[in-house]
Every structure is written in structure tokens, then in C-alpha cells.
Length: 161
Length: 161
Image 1 (spheres, chains in turn brown, green):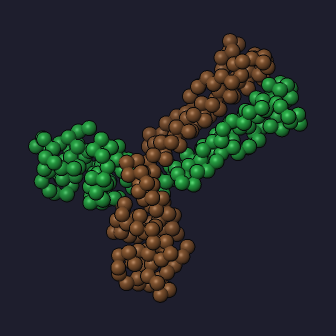
Image 2: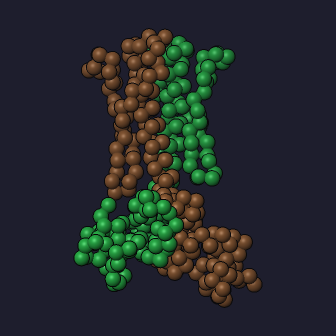
Image 3: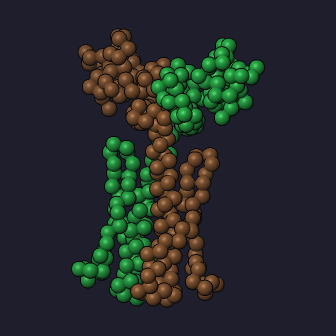
């Protein structure tokens, strides 16, 4: 974390806003002069006033993380003005669903081997069955994998799992 | 998509900003009067002026998606002022890495069965080996799983995959 408030150079925020950088500048510890684009991005997307308000609303030890997450969001929005970092969330959610389905299918194949229901040379070895097994948490908008279901070889002797 | 520009009610944005809602209001199609919180959130986090600028920068058919992604980000930032929706990205990235490791380990177990290297009752059945197999794309900040590696039973006869 660079602090420019005690140096001669104004921080990147004060330089951008063409104002004197005071020793108690709220931006200075998080926007060093050698990273001018970081402040330019958050200023363009959120506005300096909103960033300042947000920094004052969180605890001092949380401010660096807050600035870095704002900078990440701002950069993502500048790269993709329509979706911003929500685009990354969609990609990751699809990855989680795909991986969970693949894992469910691979576990199902493995259980068939363990239960001696599938011969080693079975061409269905690579088949992927797409069980699902992912639940959606509406409050966070995140897909969570469901816990692994036990007793795979128990009741069902028909090859299904 | 609700449009209040042709009704008597001002849109949620104009009502919030206490201004007359004109027929060509940029906000009206995306901020209907019955969803006042949606505009209040994006106004608090991004500022009305920044939202208006962004809407004018994207194509008309992209504006609804742009507003919805801004509303998602704004709501996430209000729930979690430190990390906002970047917190969801971190959770999802960890999920992708964990699932990819589990999948690699399960595939490794499956290959051992297929290669007849592991007896059906082997207690190592459930062991997870954590191969990795995930690559990080610095430009998007997203972890991508690596493609599946072929020829699992070929050269190496030592049980490793």
C-alpha cells in the first residue's frame, strides 16, 4: 500500500481532480501517483464523490480491499460497458454448473465400476449423464453444488445412480 | 421491459431526481415507476450522470442488459460495501478450482479402474489427488479448466496419471 500523503507528489486522485493533496486525504493511501489509471477508472465509473463516501462508510482496515474491488469493477465495466464484471460472474456460474455435471457423471461412472456393473471396456465409459446437482442461491445469485449423495450401490440395481 | 415515457407517471429515475419525465427520457424504458429501488441503488453507487452517460455509449438493444448488470452490481455493493459483486467472483473462482480438482481426481480414479490398476475394494477409492488442471486468464481474471489429457493408460504403468 503506497501512501503519497507525506511525500511531495499529490496522490493520483488529487492530481486528477487538480486539488491540493492534504495529509488526511482519504484517497492518498489507496491511489498512489504512480497508478493514475486506477483512479481515472473508478472516477469514470463510480465518481470521486461516491468513492469517497464509500471509503468513509467502511472501516479503515477494509478500505484497501474496497478500493481494489472498485478498481476491478471499474476496469471490467470499461472493458465491457454492457455487462462489466457481471459477465465474469455469468461465465463462472456456467463453469460451475458444467463442472458439477461432469463431476456427477464421472462419480456415477466410478460407482458403476465399484459396484461391478460396468465392464472395463464399456464404450459408455466417457458418457456424461448430466445429473445436475447444483442449487441456486437467489440472494447471492451464486450456484452452489449440492452435497454428494451416499449409498450409491444400495437399493437400485438397474445401473442408474 | 416497462416504458413509462408514454404514461402519466414519471419513470423511477425522474421521480427520484424530481424532474419532468420527457418522452425521450433515456432512463424511462429501464426504470419503471413500480421499481423505485432499482434506480435508487444505481444512483447511490454509480450516480445518475454516469448511468446516463453509459446508456448513451451502448447500443439501444444493449441498454436493458447494461441497466440490469449495473443494478446487480449496485445491489451487491450495497449488501457488501467492501467487496460488492467481486466477492461473488472470488467465491465462484474458488468453486471452479475445487470442482476442477475433484473432477481431475475422480477421472484419475476412473482411469485406474479402466486400466485395472485399482481393485474394486481399494480404500483409496475416495482419495482425492488434487491435480490442478486449471489455468488463470489474467486479462479476464477468470480461471479456466485445462482440457482433458488423453492416453491415460499408455506409457506410465506406475499408477500415476
